[in-house]
Length: 198
Image (cartoon, rainbow, N blue to C red; front, side):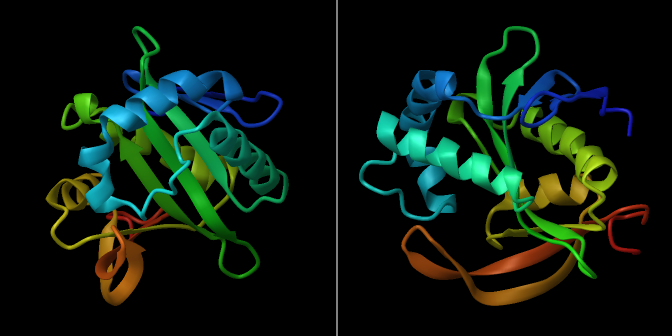
């Protein structure tokens, strides 16, 4: 994929360059910028995310988050990235591959968020587009799955633009914003045009 410029291995996770964005594993040094962006974007993000714990934006909670990320990477269960604007390294948001299943499945779930000031400018599309070759090539995942709320038009557009194919509808699939909500299910399949053979 043309948006995937390079993968350079670090001690924990590769840094990935895309079209105008740069992805790398979260570090404790990201805390201040991460907390600021999440705080100023809270009203924008909360309708699409699980309820935030009361201490979610504290340094201690972020430290626990980093420790969890390290365990997940070590155990090949998940791979988190923050993504930054390439020209000035401003933090834009995050993308994650979680719930990795090996064996006969070779699949993972995709999650993503972007700060309110940077939404609808193409940054999220660039970040996910850069992540897909890493998922399929480096991690050798056959399927990258995603679920979004049916009324989240921006997320639907993002997934369909990047070749994710709609595969179904799951009732009360995830607890988002404090209530169990229906989701549309998508998948991107390695080497299959349209993401799922359609």
